[in-house]
Amino acid sequence: MTSTIGADPTGLPALPVTDPGFAITSDLVHRAREQSWCATTPYGLAVLRYEEMSRLLKHPKLRQGSVAWPAHHGVSEGPFARWWASWILNKEGEEHHRLRRLMNPAFSPKLIGGLVPRFQALAHELVDSFRHPDSCEFVSEFAEPYAARVIAIMLGLPESEWPIIAKEASTVGLALSVTIRDDLPRIEGALARLYDYADELIEDRRRRPADDFVTALVNASRAEDGRLSHDELRDGLVLLVFGGFDTTRNQLGLAMQTFLDHPDQWALLAERPELGRAAVEEVMRVNPTVRWVTREVLEDFDFGGVRLRAGTTVHLYSESAGTDPRVFEPGFDLTAERQPHFGFGGGAHHCLGHFVARADMSEALPLLARRLRDPRPLPGASWLPDSGNTGPIRLPIGFTPGPA
Image (cartoon, rainbow, N blue to C red; front, side, top):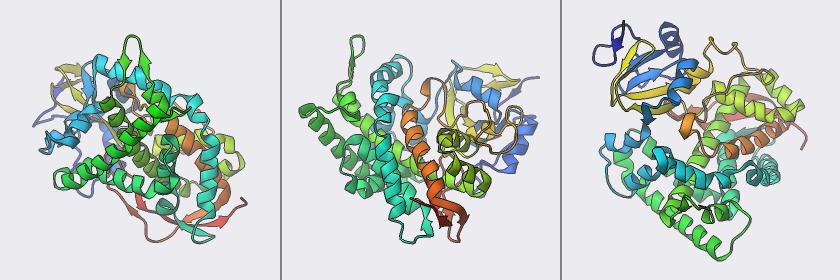
């Protein structure tokens, strides 16, 4: 019998996601996953299993769901609302495909691969500059400057400006909070300053093209697609700064958290640095910073015995799917063969910058494993809420120094 998602979701577990104590990676969610492939929430429907998430990410009757987030909080006009609506993530159909075709070459593995030696040197430099030889506050001393300076390297900005990049990107990140309306003046101020950065970069590369990421975007053109407009360029560059910084910083912190719980795998990574890419994939399977991917139902349809109504918000829980025992053996193992995870989303809206994230983190993690032996948590850690996007705010760790 088909149940209807609505006020009386007969037969489906319900998750209290608005409760301040709720955690999206909790046993409560995993128990709900054993009852049903989905659960109801105050926001709509939560998808909990791997197979159903894989199919729904590509379902033609779902569209990207985050486009309505500002409007849900009374922010429907102004600079921030316009920028949010401009995201390639929030575009659909031919407009989305056109932007993706034009922007893809700038994110090519070849172009990003040329930056790998610089990523390695940066990681060594940051470890060498820790205030104490056998301990650090991992977020402020490594994850945050690494993520911000990677963005500076990609864009050709002075790396010394990384604190500005980090500050403005973090301020724009307040838009992901339920306090978005109260924080809007600060968010739009940071957005304006990032636009100034983007305008200067675009003008500079038009005058002095280089063999780099920004020039590739400025020169992007196809006979059938035309060129990226100035607004499309600046919107895309600001999105790169915001998204690239926030997700890399958080994901590095979550990686360290995961390896603290699996010291044998950290030691293995130190011995076998070629497992760096596998480390990124395994961490993002079990502990992704993007805890859910959002979609919206375009028209009524039946799926898995549930009636999905048009307008319903669907949150696809990436950690719950990535640890689904129907698909994955329990445990955390860098040498295991796994199905693809959903840490970068999936379908038409699969993360455009995944090559960048995979490249910079797969270089950083093996190096950290060699330099920070036997890591252990120290008091004072604090965390963002375990919901949509998460990570550590502070993560003090102690370690035995390894050779440079």
